[in-house]
Image (cartoon, rainbow, N blue to C red; front, top):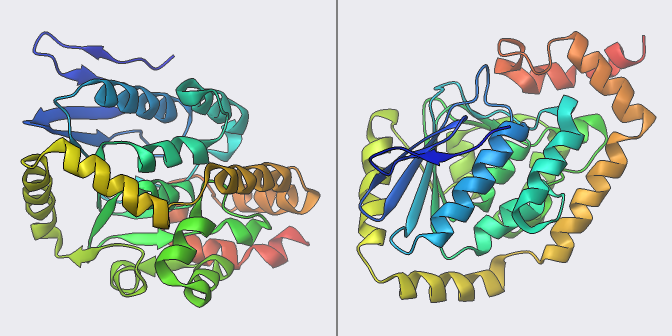
Length: 287
């Protein structure tokens, strides 16, 4: 079981996260080889990190980045859905990754995603749950590929993307199940900004420290009022989660997933171009 502990210097130690603090900012680097799949170990670590950070009044800002330049969070580990839901329930008792992510959105903590590499499926939903998203122009790739398997994204993408992009672009992104580069993601509103890779970390660090220098009470009240306008309800997130779980039990999903796994789904090399892989599934699933 993944667990966290504190080192002698007070640094939080996790199995899949490298965490350091700088003043009132925690920097959490995701490190879950071979491709940063969101599995139960990473979910448990994220839940523990959220709980510990929220309990520490000295922490105001939480920055997420990846130790892997090619994958931020690739997507959920589809072979461990039951375990994933059990790990998600450790936060508030609800076995929904989407509600874990909504908790992060509603938290008093200000959260920033610093994105390099591929962020798809629940990885995209994770960064969408963060308060701000900044991405490397040269390497960041975004995708919501779930409709290629006949299911809705289960952790809030439909809610977030529609609010951020508008109806037409949200439908394009989800129904195409394709990969989108950082420049299009910026244009569509998926992220705040696309920045040169060499400038990304310095920009995010400077912004995080600037925000952390201001009163925490202001952060909380601003987030509360913005969320009252823009954050989907827990009921809407739970409904999407339930629809996803229903969908993964359908024969068409199972057939297409088996075809995808035969083609290398959930392997590092094959998913470098996941948009192409899922586009080729129809014929493979019906031979």
